[in-house]
Image 1 (cartoon, rainbow, N blue to C red):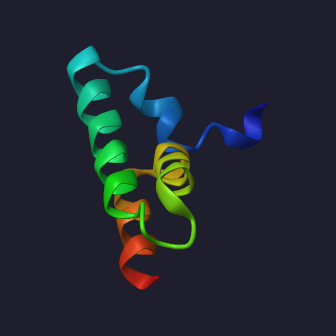
Image 2 (cartoon, rainbow, N blue to C red):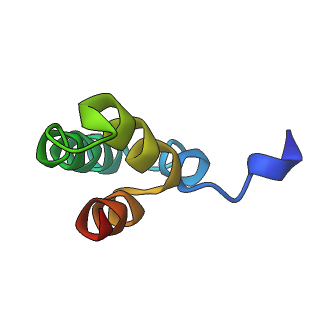
Amino acid sequence: MQAINFLPLNIVFTLAPLIQAVYLLSCFLVGIFGRKKKMGFWGYFFFSTIFSPIMGALVLIIT
């Protein structure tokens, strides 16, 4: 399991609950904006949850 220690999700869940809530809300917003795209809400939500909302937003803009 050491291969996924670099993911932002592991880092975020060690921080304060307010930061966790902001992170998940950001992921939710990326999913909302991507609901009409090819990957849909769940695809963008899970992508941004795993990799970060910034990466999710970049993928959303590119697609």
